[in-house]
Image (cartoon, rainbow, N blue to C red; front, side, top):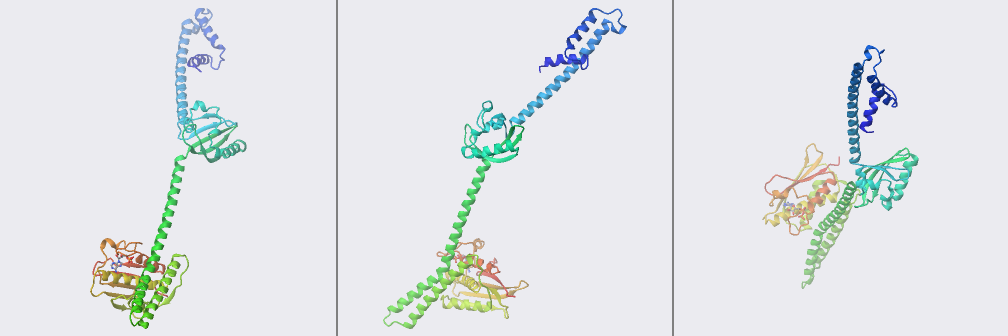
Length: 434
Ligand code: ADP
């Protein structure tokens, strides 16, 4: 409706209240007649000047009403424009489809997502914008929304007129024989989800590789010592055999040494594999003082390690509960590390002090192994228990990592004494049987 129309219409209404439009002309006529032929019998209030005055009053009144209408109209237009903007530039796409699946209405966001001008999209079918792999899915959901009046949410891949495939989330709402669609571009979210999945797979692969590398290194660590011992026993046996008068007694001892070390290697690998698997390992009650004495003896005799030892063992120590092979392995690792450090540093009198006592109120035995070697450099201290950390030319860097794992698996703890002083000091705890 034009403003002129509003003006004319309102003039008619204002003069006669709710008078029909047909009376508009007669109002003007009546007024004009009264002005031209003032009735002699007319009341004093009906004189021409009075009528003129009345008309002027009504004209002003009508103009005021017209002004009000005009501003109401402007407000309505503004509000309509605002809603049009909200519809067109909403962050999500809005599409209204006919029952046949053609586009009746579409906002600018949805048109941009479909890669086509809005004008060209009207009356076009929506289905061709769906990638062929999703056509069935689209059809099923459209039918369900249309016929079963269901409100559905689902994801679809769309092929815009220009540009790459986009992933969208569609919310379909039934309305009479129309279907309203809210279209949300989720391409970026999909890309990020894919990237996260790829990263996760890469991480899992790296983790598997890392675990494999650590397992291989742990096995190498376990085999290293017995193999070295077997090599020296074999060398000795060969030399003895090549002598003019071979000493068969010594040869037999060297071969026995080889056999013992082979068994030790086999046992170490079995222990390690058992530990790495989730299998429960056997534990038993035993005397820790006796075990430490035996390990020192074995280190001297079987591994030919040269060192002085000072034992400070607590009397009447209650039996501990642990896996004996694990405890032996850890004690031997710590002992050998100390002796190697002292030998490398050329300490003339390698000495090891082993103290065993009860840790007050904690229900555990505390073992302290201290050497008189060069000690641990401060910058290495925080890395000692990391797998593969070594400062030795032929080291593998798994001894302390495995030792800590073994002690923790047996309910204890293993740590290095941070106090800087002469030599290195390691502490470990093990639980008592009761
Ligand atoms: P590896 O013996 O193969 O190097 P470990 O895990 O047993 O592996 O030891 C890691 C590192 O800790 C050693 O390379 C060494 O630098 C340091 N370390 C361990 N024990 C001692 C010790 N008693 N004195 C000095 N350094 C030690």
